[in-house]
Length: 453
Image (cartoon, rainbow, N blue to C red; front, side):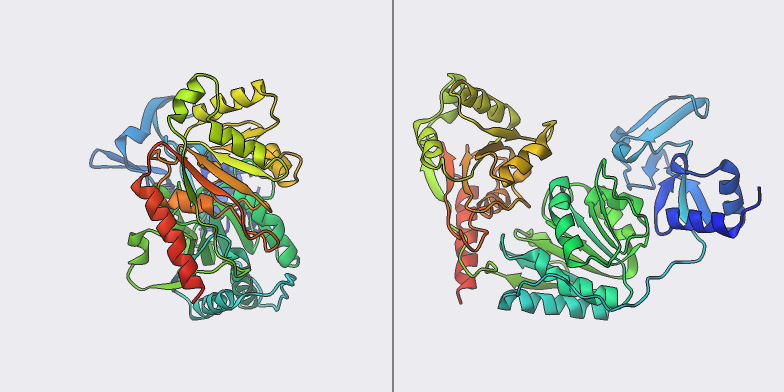
């Protein structure tokens, strides 16, 4: 069977600006062979072995502890695979890495009108204008350092509009699936005529040629020189900051002259001091009101209470005080959360629980947002990207190491995000004040003061 134009187009649409495993090839083996012979597709080993060290070409991993060798029924010999990126498909020494090397596809320059009808604040406009300039000038790195609730998504709209006008492709990467699901309908509403894809583990919205791609940072591993503009949301968050492979993937996913935009409310000192990085600060929320300052509340040995099957009195009083408002309580561990949930069940207090392994996580979060559930227990998984009006928030065990400055600032940022409800409780329940708690409060207070200048 000879390779025809229709076949070439199908392969191009599937592989263009992406890098895939040979095991993911959806066409016949003969088409792959002919594509390589005609230099439409380049293949190379996905794992390379040099000087006694394995390296995964897909994710960049070269740690010996993250490779494993076993007998492979596919190649009928001992085979090694990368454990680090296994969730994206098994990258093993008997597989090839496929990249499109044929003609490039280009997006037409076109005018598009953003359907969002809101109005940007003065700070938002300044930041937005700078991003438009960054896109026009190309090859810039720009950090938007914005307080929680500054309206970072809306700041991107004029930049996206300009990028579409220039025929650019835009990638927006964020650490968590929950954030992708929340942003996706907002982007589709704002830009209904622009082809879009929302990518995360298990998603079905997989248009490979979408001009506007919203994805979890892990999904960037599948892209190669794809984006003219790459936005990294919550650049300080886990896992992006702690996983070198995600930074490796983001570098490969963008074009050489791409503009890179970082978004964060709590950027690290290392990021802020990056050479040639342009920094724009937004110290004020879009509605102009300050972020509620956290209150420190000593709660004693809260862990002993939980072990005895009781809740600290101050915690119980707070839960009962706000029965007419949505309440969100953060816990330092899954086990602590589960123990508290059992106690609330015995007290017949209706509530929901979410954590990384919770099977019903997304339906529970939706129920909370839709006011069908008024009390939600969570780990730090909801420290970012969740907006609920009139929300009241508390942190149990705020002195625990998992609650560092950035985490506590983000948690406080859940409160007062809506213009109609700019205030609310943010309590740090503790068994001893920590430096992180003090730094978080100082951080918020400083940004509030800057925003009022």
